[in-house]
Image (cartoon, rainbow, N blue to C red):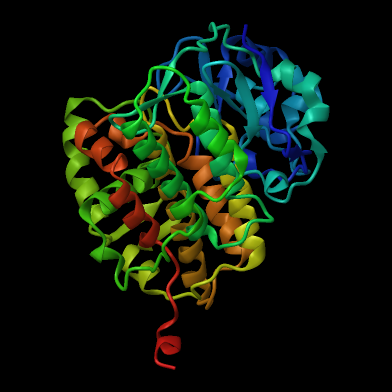
Length: 433
C-alpha cells in the first residue's frame, strides 16, 4: 500500500500574490465544477456578467473544460484583491483540482508517493508558511494517492546500461542531496559536479562488482558520509568563452528544454507526425544559440545572442545559491530522477538544463536592466519561469530524436559540458585587470 511522504523541509502559506493566477497557461476545470459556475449568481462582479466562464479544452480531454481568461493572461476569476472569486463565492472545494493542489507536487516512487513543492510560488521560494508536515490532513484532501501497488524489488536505471536496487538508489540520492545542504561548501556548479562524480563512482562499483541484490558495502559507503575520493574533490567548472562552443549534444538538450517557451500558449498536447517533422529544424535553430523568438514566459521578444553576450559576475550571491540549492535538494528528495523515461544520470542531467534555463531567463532579465550581476530578484524570476512553464511538462525528446537525445542525457561527458553552458562569465572589463 502506498502512503504519502511529505517533504520535511517544505514550507508554504498562500500569500495571495496572484502569481499562479496570472499565467499564459490553460487552467483545466472538471466538468461538474464548470457547470456549477453557470448555476451561481455572480452579478456582484460586473466583468463576469454575460461572460463565458469556460470553453472546450484545447487538448480535447473528456470531462474537463478550460477556464476563460480575463485581462491579459489573468484568470477570469482573479479578483482585484488577489483572491479567487470561485473560492470566495462557492468555497475551496469548487475550485479546479489543479488550483487546489498548487503548489503541491506529487511524485510516485516504487514504494511511496512523495509530496513536495513547486518553486514557482513566491512563498515557497522564500520558505514562508507552515511546515508541510503540519499540513498533512489538508494535503491528503487535495493530493490523491494513485492506488498503484508498491514495487519494492524493482531495479532502478542508473545510466543506459546499469541498474541498481531501490535501497542503493535511495542511498545514492541521499548522498547527492547532502551535496546541496546549506552547510556544505562550494558553489552550485561544484555541487552538481560532485553528484555526477557520485554517479560515476556507483557505475564503476557496479561494473566491477555486479550483483542482483543490494550491495550492503556500497550502501554503507554512501550512507557513511565518509570521503568518496573524486566525489568530494570535483573539478573546477569553467564557463565557455562562447556558449556556442559547447558540444552539439549539450546545445540540443538545452534547446529541447527551452523549446516550450517558443510556442503559443494555446498549443498543447503531443505533436502529430508533421508537427514532429517541423520541430526538428526549430530545435536545430535554437541549438545554434542565436536568433530572436517571442518568449511565452517573459512576454517579449528575446534575442539569444544579446542575452548571452551580456556578461555578469561569475559568482552568484549567497541568497541565490541558497535558493537554487534548496530547489535541487527538493527535487532529489522527490526520488523522481529515474522513471520509464530517464535514468538517474539522465534525470540529473535534465535538472542541470532546468537550472541552465533558470540562468538564461535570469540573464535575460539582467540584460534588460543592464545589471552587472545576477541577483536574487533575477534568479527568483528565472526559477518561476522554469517551474511554471518548463520543468513539469513533457519533454520534447519524448517526441523527436528520442534515441539520440537520450544517449546525450546518459553521457557523463556531455553532462559536464552542460554544467559549463550557462555558468555566468566574468565581465569583459574584469578579464583585462
